[in-house]
Length: 142
Image 1 (tube, one colour):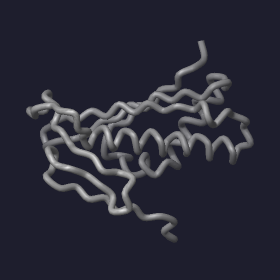
Image 2 (tube, one colour; image 1 turned 180 degrees about the vertical axis):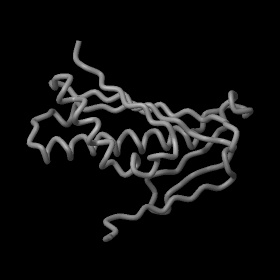
Image 3 (spheres, rainbow, N blue to C red; image 1 turned 135 degrees about the horizontal axis):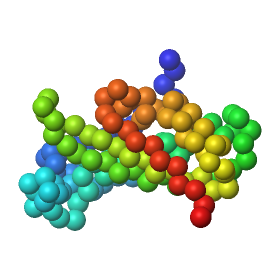
Image 4 (cartoon, rainbow, N blue to C red; image 1 turned 60 degrees about the vertical axis):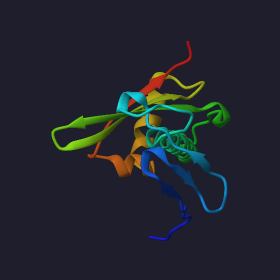
């Protein structure tokens, strides 16, 4: 396996601390949501960061699958909304994810096929496979 890119990220102070990347693009405070026993606040949290990363990566996977299958889609209008749940089960803490995928201009069959195939190739989907529950939804034009 050839590494194409590596990102270095630093978290200090756990869920009430700060995250940054040494090269500068990310530099933000963290806050623990009230529903998790925290004080809330203006900072982000690991679930939001993970959701943003998963949504962006999954959108790119949809684009890659469409390109490989020569399906014309408007890539600038693709959107993926990731809802990340933090939960507790018998073994401790866990995550769950729902990905709502919007691919403008595709029919139901094509869209479902793209989403399923994207789930097979997306690195975040591979990393979470058989570890967390991931629900995939296709949103269609009305």
